[in-house]
Length: 301
Image (tube, rainbow, N blue to C red):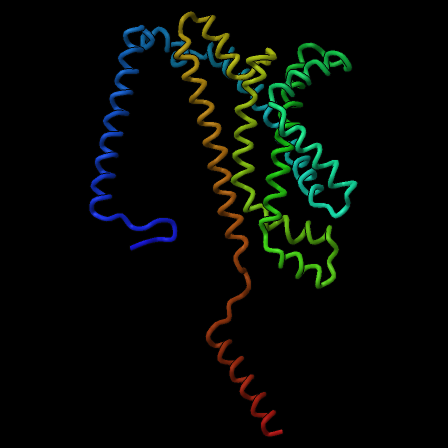
């Protein structure tokens, strides 16, 4: 039995896939065993290296929580600014006016082509030379600036693609009943495009969260990854333990974000379904009787 995506597998293909799966599982188990043995031989699994994270709160209160707070702060600020800015730029690229469409396209293509790390370094130099922002706050400002400029441009393309993916009949029907283009965009196109754009938008939000680590690596921004580096130096030689804990935290944050987005997407899809009142059988019968009576009256007339 075939499906839309692929043809159903025959007996030989099924046996071959079972063999490939078994080989992959054995290879993965061997790799994990080798990693475990290597870490054990190097002494990286000693309890003394992992103890700070499971007995006491010093490592969490001094290093992990402050770093996590800075990571979430930078990511939240970047998201709050980049989302509306990206939406405006994406809609502007669809404008009928050349003086709106061309500058928006130049801004999007320019900042989308520059690595986000370069934008962060540029922002740091900009705030140092031309503003009165204190040296303690400059890394945060620079990280947020780089994230906003780059991700707003990417989100603009996501918004533009999501709107263009809708059937043209949507806007044509809205304009046929007298709606202006701004009203069509706001009330017809954007609400429908949100569901289509949501997976790509969430993927970009995950990128924003992870890219805050660039500020810690280059701009001395005290985010989560930089705090792990400092923490491993303080406790001595527990680099693997520190970065493992940080990796688990990143995985948990991104998993929570994608889970929430999946729930929101399902909710939006359900909300799009018809919510009109359903006629009962009695109501349908009465409607049919009324129609018949009207027809009979018409015939008698």
